Picture 1 (cartoon, rainbow, N blue to C red):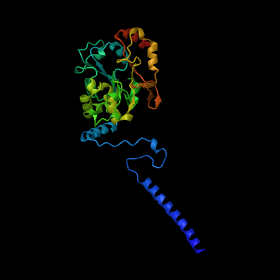
Picture 2 (picture 1 turned 90 degrees about the horizontal axis):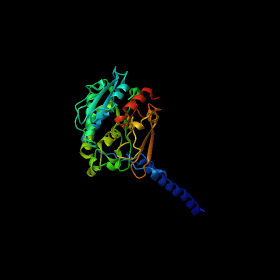
Picture 3 (picture 1 turned 180 degrees about the vertical axis):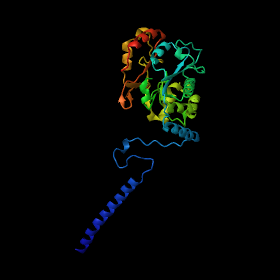
Picture 4 (picture 1 turned 60 degrees about the vertical axis):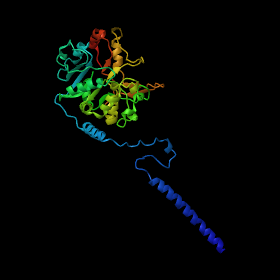
Length: 358
């Protein structure tokens, strides 16, 4: 009986040792986690999670630029006793709709300022409210960084007035009640989006940060200052974002601001523009409205749109829908629309007298 007793006493010991060994392995696997990894280890769902994005080492210029931009974004807004909206007009010559704008501004003379950048020829103004509002301008070539230069020139002039709190590139009173900027920005994996990215943008701009959007923006004062102080990312676009196959037919006015704000303040923008542009025809230029196309019903339908829609340029043509939120409430997206031919002015003047945006 003695040998049998010794055998039975050894079995539990080996079991205990085996269990202890397994526990040690499990504990070690749990405790040994690289600091950059936030996923799970002993779960069947681990394989479905994407690997963590490696942290890139910034250059000295990037560290300095991001420090300045961070302070600008986080700085409290400078309140004015007479806050105004700066309306900035980027135009090749004279503005055909000045009389309509005069009607729009009527009764709000102390709440707006006007700045006109004419890129081709001296303007002739039909309305007195535009007289003397021209700034020093330079030639602008479509699709080149000169478009961004003109925007920066307009912002620099408008920022000289400390009362200007919002800056509209060609809104309504409730713009004053929001603390975000209306910059159109979305991720387009197709040839007209990510396909325009070039590795010359590295290391400062990586492909996953590349965005596309409409040129027409509304920005708050902090963001207007940020656009002016940026030389690092602007420099990359100036050198490597140009028309032509060598530069992947890149257009700075469609990618610079969407990409910049996606990198430095993604939660500070609305990701849509307050200016409606109809690209439904699938052409290089948006739909244009002649006098015969312009009606009360057209304006009412534009003013009722409460979703921002983007369509990718790849073969799938995926539709991305986003509700237009103003301070947590779903509201109509658009305050303006383009493009209308000058011949539509009289029709628009008649409609405007009876038109009210709800």
